[in-house]
Image (cartoon, rainbow, N blue to C red; front, top):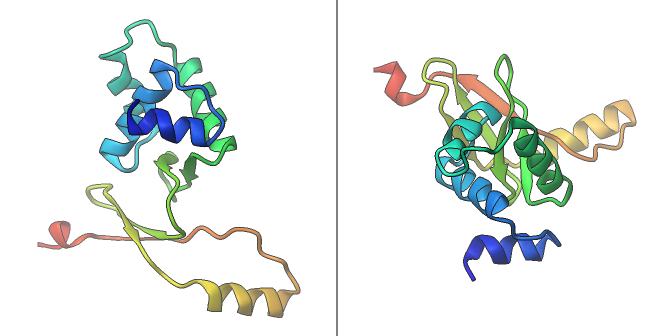
Length: 134
């Protein structure tokens, strides 16, 4: 039994070959949009449909195995759920970098100022990465 099978079962999901392949691809890329995922998985499962990809992504997201990262002016990407973190998005090469930022102070300030209970926050900072600056 591989790690992806265990991961799926820990999230109360059946370990189908398609789901294992989806997680494997997402794990290799780190962050991937549906189009790239579909291109990559078609090499292994020629008859898989885009609807099947969407259905599996939705199910794995509902079961907190995958997380949708909404990016400004870009298609959403998906990643395997890990500890709380934020993202840097390069506007030139479109790379996405995980960063650890303590957003508690911002969340507490906003909650207090606007009397708003924040359930979730997603921080994406965009600009240019060090490779694109040179």
